[in-house]
Length: 312
Image (tube, rainbow, N blue to C red):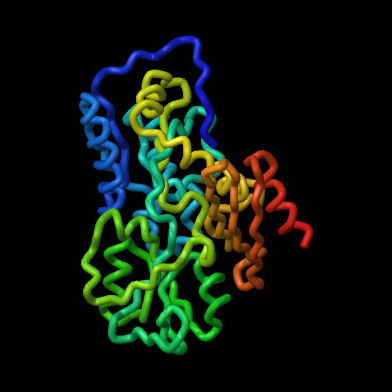
């Protein structure tokens, strides 16, 4: 969650800010997005590329990596060791608990939180749901995505695929799978060529995304109050924090990372009411359950959703 920093001794900050990032095309887009925002305010920014376990451990599926620190722990170590000042993460990759020495000082505006099904154009069949042909081979390593696509289409065959977004698109184009389920945010950010595909855009209220999908998290050292002020003043979107705090609290209370078959998506309407859509299976392969709930406040909302799943 996003908490204010209370620090007696303000730490001075030079004009240079060192941003730590992974080296994938999407991670670099995200880091350069933040870099350009800070540079427009007069700060000097340099990027430090750091390789994580998630980048090198290609034998593990994403559901065993995301949300458990495999994409973030090396960046966090670089922060603690003061080799970088600011780490830019895909928020869905961050564990809900991290080192006491660190703090999420802010979050970005939310890009499209939805999942999209990207189908080889020669395989698309509009006679069937989601334009997926019968017995389609679907590429995804996310237990959340597996549970939801099988809920709607029991006939499909799930194929575990790894790699960055361009690599996974390539596996569809090469015919290794008929389709892949990918985050809309990544596609919109790096804008790959999509002429070879039919894209089916799922609605996040129906095919529920991962908690905080589409959001960037800005992590700093807890007592770096000067940089905290900069993040708050120039990068942070409180409206995003309002809803992602609910989504990530559900994940935290269920004591799971992204290996958990959990989708959680929250919206706040113009009157301030919170509306949450969730999909959850107790374990991979278990039946998927849906539960939606609206509150006038975020207080107790995540707890009520988790209580429903634990008692029904």
